[in-house]
Image (cartoon, rainbow, N blue to C red; front, top):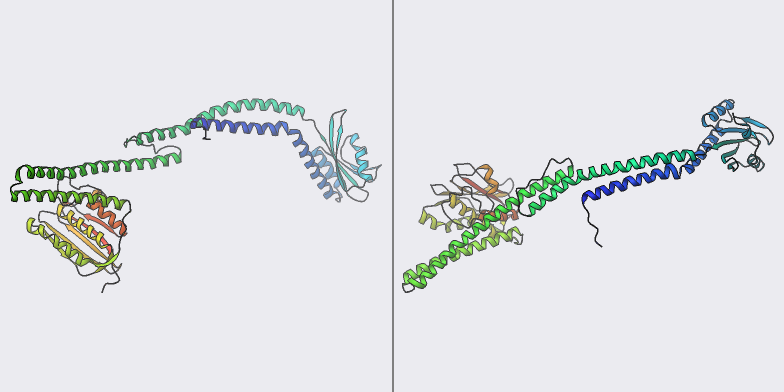
Length: 463
C-alpha cells in the first residue's frame, strides 16, 4: 500500500501536536495517576536510608542527639527497645507511636534481623510505614513514617494540569503553524523554482541566503546545476546550429552539381568530371563531419578502448607534416618542425588524430606570415615527451582558455583563415588526451599567437 501523501505544512504541524500530546500524557501519568504509588515508594526509600544511618550512629555516645535531629528533619519516628516492655530510646514521637504495637511485638518475638510493615487504619483512613532492624541481641530499632493522604494534592494537580494542558495545546497549535510555515516556505520556493528549471527556464535563481543551512546548501548546488545546464543547453543549440549548417552546405552543393551533371554537362567529359569531383569532395567532407561527431560521442561515452603500443613520435610527426605539403605549395603555408627520434607509449592512431586536429586548428588561425611551429621536447626529469604546436595568430584571452575545448567554440568568431576540419576537433583532442591521463593545455597572449601542448610517457625502448 502506498503511503498517504500530504503537504509538508501538515506533516510538521501534526508531528508537533502529537509531540505535545505525548508530553501532556506523561505529565498526567506521573503527576496524577501514579502520584500515590510514587510517594509511597519514595517514603520507603527514605526510611531505608534512615535505618542505615541508625545502624551507623548507634554506637556513637551522642547518638540520641543525632537521632533527635534526624527525626526532626525527616518527620519520622525513631525508637529503640531492649525488650518488649521498656523503651530504650524514643525520638520526639506521639504517644501512640511509642506503644509497642502488634507489628513491633511480632518483629521482636520472631527475632527478625530486619523487616518492613505497612500499617493501615481503615477507620481513620491513615497509613503508616514501619521498618524494624536488630541492632544487638536485645536491642531493636524501629523507624516509622506516616503516609499523608495525597487526594487533595492530586485534585489540585488535576486542576492545574487541566489548565496547563489547554494552554499547551493552544500554544502548540500556534507554534506548530509558525514552524511549519517557517520550514515549508523555503522548500516550497525550491520546489517551484525546480519546476521552472525542469521547463527549461535556466534564468531561475535559488536563494542561497536561507536561514536553514541544509536548504542554503541545496540552493547553492541547484544554482550550480542551473548554470551548468544553461551552458549545456547553449552548447547543444550551437552544436545543432553548426552541424545543421555544416551538413546543409555540402548537401546543397552535391545536389546542385548532381543536377548540373544530369541536365548540362553529362555530354562534356571534362566538365562532367570536374562536377563529379566536387560531388566526391563534398561527400568526403560530409563523411569527415559524421565520423568526427560519432568519434566525439564515443569518447564522451567512454566506449573507445585505447590500444597502447611503443612508436616513434618523431617519425609520426614528420610523416604528418609531409602530408600538409599541398598547403605549402598551394597557399604558401610553412610548417617548421624541430625534434629528434624518441619512442613513446600511447595509442598511435589516437595520437595521430590529436596531431591532425591541432595542426588543422593552427592552419585556421595562424598569422599573416602563415607560419606554424611544431616542437618535440624531451624531459628526462619526469620521463616524458612534450609536443608543442604553435601558431602566430591573434592569440587568446586568458578567460577564454577553458572554453576553447568546447564543441564549435571560436575565440574570434569573425576570423578564420582557412576552413580545415569540422569545428569539434579540439573537443576530440581533449577527450583523447584525458583518456591517456596525460598533461595537456594551451596558453598564449593577444597578438603573440597560441601554443597547444600535450605530454606523453617515454617508452622503455628508447635508446
